[in-house]
Image 1: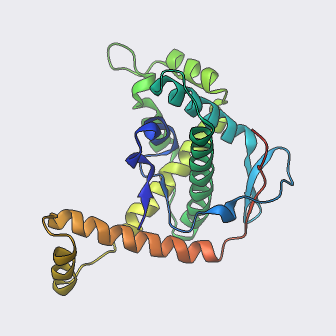
Image 2: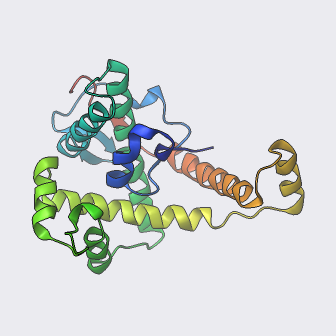
Amino acid sequence: MMTFLRKHKIKIFLITILGFLAGTFVGFGSYLFGEKTYYDTVAVVNGHKIPYQTYYALYNNALNMVRQANNGNLTEEMSKRVQNDILKSLVQDEIIWQQTKNYGIIVSDEELARDIQSYPYFLNDKGQFDSRYYFDFLNNMRMSPKDFESLRRKQLASTKLQIFIASSARITDSELKALRKLYPGTEDNALLQMKMNEVLNNWFENVRQTTNLKITMEGKN
């Protein structure tokens, strides 16, 4: 089963920035970390490099959020957890993004613009998009508009594909009965969600098995 980042209280910021369905799939473990071979890269997925600059912008801001949530306290364990979650999310997004091309999934400029203009961070007191807030936010994130918009385009396409794959889940009457026995008191909709998660996770695991992945960031923070 999948463990979504949104399950953890300190991940609220990551959910907003890394995508609404950005999750950590089973199989993302210690194998992620390997020898550092690129100075400007945290990972290489099927030959495509994930920039260290993108990772660090997210990592640094997430640490600030963790500090605020813990009255300025930040343990090494917290730091490692944030580091691992962001790295896994970026790798996951890239893997799924590459798969979106096989399914013909695209994100138009109009869709991307609507997504960005709907961010609460970028709205003024009247609920309207304000470019000043947008650029202030990116300045604080230390990200360029191009990098941020590229990241969001990938995440939106990945979300579309995840929804498409998960929607193919079907649960038979016998499966539903078995799940009701295993999880008494759980609503049928929640049981169906569990089945969808299983389908999505199995799909991702199959894709991951054929992915050429190299993590190159160890020791960079």
